[in-house]
Image: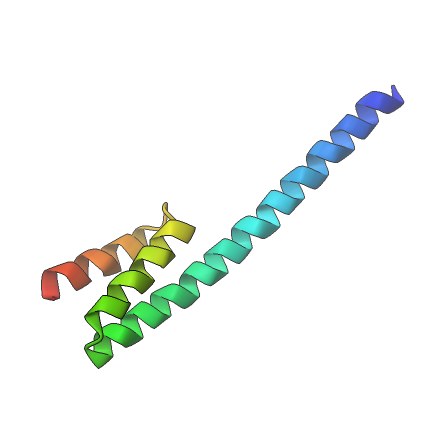
Length: 76
């Protein structure tokens, strides 16, 4: 019985760690998105492309990052 409780506690802990790491990645992705947009405004297109890549790597499911990147590609 104690073994099952311990396993359950470990799973809850691992899920919590995963959620914290995921939130950290999303926060970091936001930072890279802001950097990419700043680089675009400054005409630094190579740096913008790299920053968009890092943002998408950290948050591949974020449609706002993907859409911003596609707009960058179209307007470039």
